[in-house]
Length: 568
Image (tube, rainbow, N blue to C red):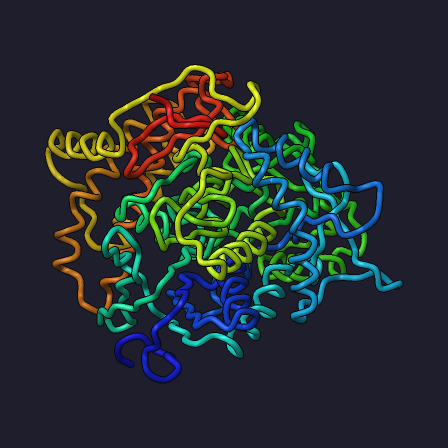
């Protein structure tokens, strides 16, 4: 196999090239090619069905029924979880347009669970005031959504590039014009397009314990940073509290739906210690602190009171059976695991980034929806909603970002109420400051780490990030971790020189992890408060002056108003 495999016919000139094959990327490709007749292509580092989407268990949060639920309640729950950093306009778009996107998915053939009367079954998860989560196969929602979208893309896309890895964006005349990609055999090639959509997912592989697949190496955020696009909120990494404590990786996820149906959290002594339906960041913090207090590496999820477990949660039941556990009689060992990157490439309400021709949707984007902590089951919905908006904007002829949504933090236009504006501020010279920090750490190091090869270096980075930049952080842990990341970054050229052509993608993934780890560590160091999924043990309070985004990229590293202009 040479070059980029599975291209349909000769390389076409594309209107839209989608990077990634999760819910956001495939939704965009289906809409672009099937609805609008665009020449749309999908490039993915695995096969189409290999994405984080297929691991999603809980479901899709959307108000599809009648009262007592409402989109206003869904909006309020999302804002509460986001700890003051959600953009209310972006959340309003999500909750208002979400039901339509879910119905479109059903029309494509997605089969959600229904009761005996044919009504959609609705579950409740942490942070939601009412049951509004639609699901499939009990806890196999992502796999069902992925199946429906993959089938549709294979029938509509102009080009499909599988087992291909996007190395970097092609930027010409200050506009994105495609990507440079590497095939499975290490052969490079340029794929050109009028528009490029980043839908590359998150950054779970920054950490040693994660629910994300091995492909989740922050590629889109890293490419955007290198191209000079604005990135924000990367310090907010959500850790899922109930990942199965088990050697397998990614860690099997014990869905939030279990707690929604009555499963209980117990400590090493068998005592309950936290409200199981609190937002994920609060539960993960409570668990981590209890584990530290009790000097244990895991706690317990007690699902023994749940009836008909195998029938209601067949996917989870199968995973537990393979691990030798019976949820009807056994307490299930659990520990927090890196799950979701709440920030990413800054995008406006149509998914446009600060770089013309570049778009972002899904987990790779900072749309303003999630703020400092994502509300459970809003992620699949975000991917569907904003992917559709990207395509509609391209169809209208748009290519430049507007000061809407999270993009207000980059382009300004502070037209909000006093409650939404910034209080105080902080400025540094910026993303360059991160480069200087890295250079100084490397210069002060006696020698680089004994990384051996790319997989070994990746393991060292993951262990350092888990220890020093995980659920709980402080200044000392962030400094120590920054030093380790800098040393690994300094070893990259030698690693690349010693790596066979066919394994260069491993080095490229490591370089992306180093790039985004550096961004996360800088942002976490600058944010000397605790908010949402970012907890500083040395700064436990939430401070008003940090009610805004830390934006990295061409504009620098600045604490910007969540809905206002950059700090001067």
